[in-house]
Length: 433
RNA sequence: GGAGAGUUGGCAGAGUGGUAAUGCACCGGACUCGAAAUCCGGCGAACCCAUGUUGAAUGGGCGCGCAGGUUCAAAUCCUGUACUCUCCUCCA
Image (cartoon, rainbow, N blue to C red; front, side):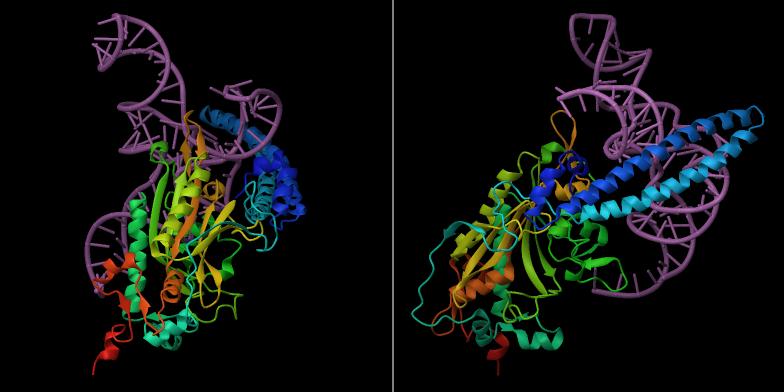
């Protein structure tokens, strides 16, 4: 949610900034018109209410003194009707106004590459060496199915397309990866959480998924509940409607949760493998900061996500998304994309964003500054990381010519001595008999 | 799923139709070398509107979980709803 008063003061600045995100200038004008109407109506109705309050006080006194107040009561009856009519107009006007306002995305930060499409993203740095294969590298789905550790066919039988069973050492690899991620983030000062996976509409609205992206999520039938599309929702709503003691800030939290996405509109894209699932695990990082800390904290958070990839030895690059490609609530977003040898390209594995006060304004999350004044906190969120895509990258980058997969060194402690996933050790039930 | 109780300021807690007691906390002052205690005064989150200012305010609105309704007037009456607690039922 943008600051309505600020829009009122500097409409042209907002028009210019939001145009880079595809917002038409008329959208701002509409808001301004509705805002002007709102204030006009408020002045009218509030003047009448003041009059009514005054009269009611006198009527009360008259009644106590057993005097007649019939005349005043009759006059107030009339005013009461006017007030009611005006209040209805205000309510109608407000509904439209706040709906328009809620559909405006956050203002992009200075320096974010301007483009209405994803083209034009700025590469910040490239890290890690791309491995040279002396054989044709396989896709992770082929590696996984050959080893028996990824079973898409049976998942289709049970759930449908875009679901998977991890089996045996595959399941263990997923678990090792997210445990490793959580352990690293705890070292970096994050508090681990295990939040609800189903949230109400208010929470979805607070983090900006609603009202714009209702079709992208799974709603519980007949209830006002939604399966979380990301842990950002429960983690960022945690302090909703609170004044956070300033000395607590910045607060770092992290959680492993599944994420549920309907992937409406992505039919035909990434139909194979772990890249685009209806349910996937993700370790999420969320920060609450003071207003002057959030840009520093964005860099640190990006570094926290990068640390995971560096320790796993996976090559990646960091890009700053364009104005048109950023998520609705973000002011600036750094994406980490890791190298998928079989596809021969980088794929997104993390997205770290500074939302400034955009979410806090909706969620009423504030702190008191040095002067005792209430300020909105800034919120940041980032994946640290998408677990399934990380596993996919491990399978592809650590594959061997014989179809086995070497376990990255930092994960070996989680495997209690196993250093390689082979056809022989991958799935115990395939060995038996 | 059934029955009951509750939701009021930072906290505690009164208030069954006349415009939100009181206590603690907090802020200012007095007393004191200073502090505690005591006394005096203030303060009831946030929000919205107007005039004004840019770390001055003043006036008004709103405000007793939320949303409606009745009324000249609602914390109070009515309807709906959310959440919390207790008991029963069920359950990992």
